[in-house]
Structures are given as C-alpha cells and as structure tokens.
Length: 362
Image (tube, rainbow, N blue to C red; front, side, top):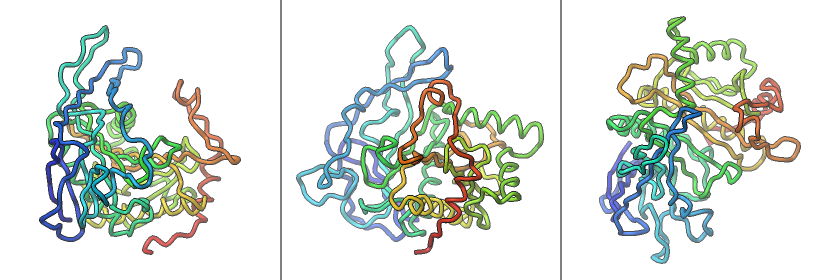
C-alpha cells in the first residue's frame, strides 16, 4: 500500500492511497480556501445516559447534487469545487467539511445538562475515483486495499489521546439517508465508546470473564458447525446471518479466530475479509438485480488505553430490505423502545442469499 498525506487550502488533511506508487504532483483541492473552523458540541442525555452530538451547520451540506457536480469525484472543470484531485489514486480520505466531531471544537455552551466540546474526527473515505462503481463491484484487490486503509486509519486515529473509539461505516442508498451517490464510507473517531458498541462490549466482557473465551468466537463456532446460516466461509473469515438477526437479510462478517481490530489482522486474513465482504455485497445485488441499500457498521476494540481481550472485530450489514414490494423501515417499537420485530426468520431469508451465485474474482 502506498500513501501520501497532503493539506487542503482550508487546513483539512487529504490522504491518498494506491496499490501503485503515487505521483508527486497530486494536489489537495477544497471547495474553499477559508480556514475550516467547525465547532460541534455534546449534550448529555440524562435519561439514556449517553452523549448527543450537535452540529447545526450540517443542514447545509451537499445533498444529492446533479451528476455534473460531484464533490467526491475528481475535477473535470474549474466551475465546481471538488474534494479529491485529478490524477492516479485508488482511495482518498479527507476530513469531513461538515463534521459531527472535530478536534477544533471548543467552548461548549453552558446548559441545564452537562455539555462538552465534541472533540473527535470525522473522515470521508472515497472508495474509488469511479463515481459509477459500488464497493461490491470493485476488483477484489481494490476491496483489499480499502481493508488496509481501514486498518491504517484505526492505528493512526486510535493513537490520538482524545480518541476512544474508531468507527468505520458505510451508508448506501437514499433509503438509508445517503447524501451523495459516489461510492464512499465514513470514519467517526469518538472521544467515548458509542452506546451500541459499549453494550456489545459489555456482553462480550461478561462472557469472557465467565468462560475465558470470546462471545463472538463461540457464536461463530456454533454457526460454522450448524452451517445453515453461513453465506461465506474462507480460511480466515466467515460471513453468516446470525441466529439472532434483527433485520431480514442481516449478515455479519468476522474473522474465525478473535482479532480486536483491522490492524490486528494478518495480511492473509485481510484479503479473506475483503473476499467475504465482496461475496455478501454481490449476493445482495444479485438477489434484487439492482444496488441494494444497506448500512455497513464495523465494531472493533476501543482505543481508550484499556485492555480489551473480549473485543472481536466484525462487520454488521443492516439492510433496508424489501418485503412484499415495499421497504421496511424502523418504526415505533424499534426506535422508541429498542425492541425489534423481525418480519421473517433468519433461516428462511439466508437461503435466498445462499442461492445467489457470484463471481468474486471477476
């Protein structure tokens, strides 16, 4: 993997990655030359016992621009600003122009609940210069490079004393709120462990202390032995619909043997992780014959300085799935009470995914 770090005129960093050496003349464009000074803040939610981030300026971010203007695509003219340069590169990472978290945050407003500057990092990960591509349709070697990029960002961001948790994710499809069609994901580096990850880690920690073995490691062993819900099994990584899936067509991807983060995976395991992800994504698209909307969330060990032997890296795909000709959205029980109602059984929907034949090496 080749990497170059540049600075945009507004002060934000741009990181370019390539499978081949990068040219020396690559630029770092930005929509503005004015200094980037976002100031988000956190407010404590007493009833939920968690932080809520506030960044009102996000209302003005780009939303579904016309095809001739894509700020994540290399510039083709001087009429529209762009975030990535012309030239040869494979993956680009830059600080979000409208971040939920910022290391520049300061002076949170005094209120009736505790507040704090929302100090952290929000990065955009542009998967490819090709605006018409999708993550699952990229060559396998390119997907493997993206896994290497996630590992690099985990290590670099996790070394910062302000950062307690590095969370890569992708939203795909307007059904799940995507604001730009260009294939891209994001990385949020939080100053705290976010609630969903904290809850998972709590359960994993309890199981590890009681049994001396990882909870997800044990679940994976059962899924492999059962085989009924397995979508992909490679030498290092498995993809499966969990027995406790809350969403129809939900799939998890994880190394068979515990690894706390992308950075802890061996080179072979990273390549197998890429193959597993691409298999799942091709099956999703093949099942519907069109790009499939989903949220892809990665959970890994916190970077808070504590030991986390319970942590087990894994990806969770949450589809916005079609059921009886319509999209299923979260409703009152799921959002308001946190109790999910599944409209189908994991053992039934996984058969549809298993039946889709894909060519990962194409």
